Image 1 (cartoon, rainbow, N blue to C red):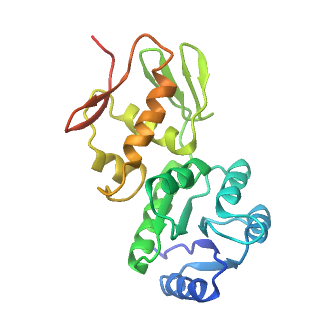
Image 2 (cartoon, rainbow, N blue to C red):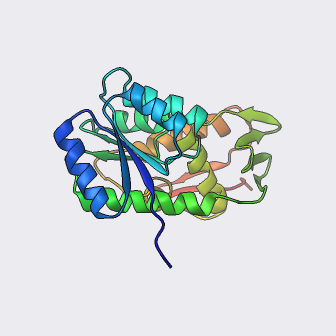
Image 3 (cartoon, one colour):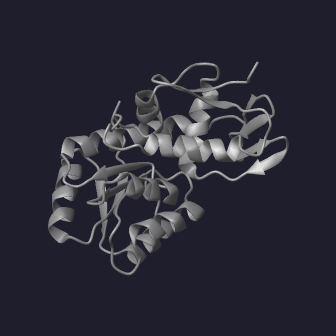
Length: 232
């Protein structure tokens, strides 16, 4: 079977870096469209059908965070990878909150970027055409079609990354999930022991789905990970 060609939008204002990435992607048979500022990238997304976007954060006219937030309104399912020199926990959380699916810190190896792209494209293929489905635990429910989460009938607003984290936990209800499993399945990467972004997101999620309710569902197992389950 002939491999399908994926169209990638690369948003990078450093011409040298952009050229190197473009060359590396084209060697892997990806079709690459270039944009050198956030506003141009936004217009391209609205007028073209891209399979994935790679963007720097610090960009002219519109930064990558704002670009990501706006694109999420128009193309909520477009896989987005952020490339940036900003690599601490707060920077990563800000990127994920803006709607990024993955986050790669400069400098990086081209083969790692290729692997991240492949993982996101594979996940996007598997998520298309799914039938209407609702996941439930106690009085918590997630509608996979409308992307709405409710508890006791009350809608709970989640960021895209919080939604994906809760989805993975709901798919593994009653089982202790390690940080490395979460990193691999929710962030498509290996767990970075130098940052605590997973714990940060667990805390975000716990506040939203548990804080205002008597029955707690998200539990921490010291030294092992996290588990979503009803208390006995």
